[in-house]
Length: 336
Image 1 (spheres, rainbow, N blue to C red):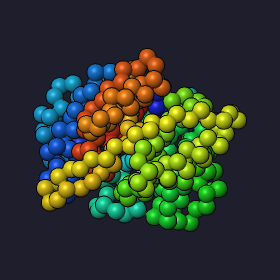
Image 2: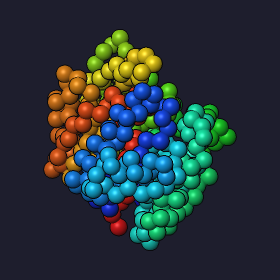
Image 3: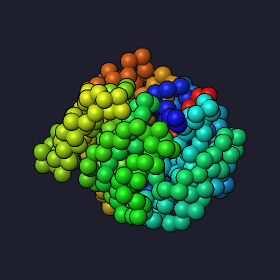
Image 4: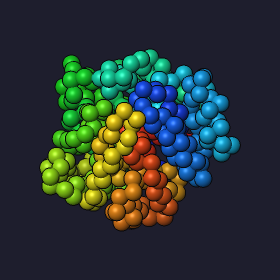
């Protein structure tokens, strides 16, 4: 049966995209570029990083990233490769296969997106990986997997009418079973209240630490909409069984930071979830924003991944201003 490897399994490398949509970032575009370069170089200490850049941006990306990051020219519209990039699986023959899902820019929110819709196949074909195209709108940030047949997602995102309006939840689950080997899909009701861009991606609020153990984002302020939303998600997770019939061991990261960023045309309040972290070969990379709880929350996350170096990067507010975080701009390529 097809299997979706867990993010903590060995990587051949990480793929990212250089910022391309300047209007998304406003006056923060240069800061966004610097944040992408900082993330790329932090990962490159542990595994190879390929930075995809639009033709007009190749030289700029190479100069910012330096010699430790491979910069490759590829037509792109945006930098959220978690969602536009391929999702790699291992097939019945043990081959690593790039699954290429339909990408519609989170419900036609940001135009154009023709190049992003083709980026997964173009990247995989450049690497020489076999590609399997799937006729369903889907993004990598909408799931987290345990490598053992269990996926967690949000109903808010996957069943949103701007994704696959003619598909039922049963049909979505059946597709995930065939294409990703999901013997069990756990549906959390909500994503973050301010996550309008992705309609509630799960990678802002949940990540597996091991089969049977799920890390969840909590909220420490009862006055925030996320306090109730995330509490409901926690209750659902605690009542769920995984593909092996186990009750989930749920670990909550209790603090949910908010920050204010000046986009040049006004100040915007953004949410910076710690859960939008990324796992690689020997590390866990956590977005922070200068909150008083940063050190404690990063330490709590580090406890869930023993033997890995936990790295806090204060790029969370900048990336959130564009609509995402560290996990959103990275895509792992599993080792053979």
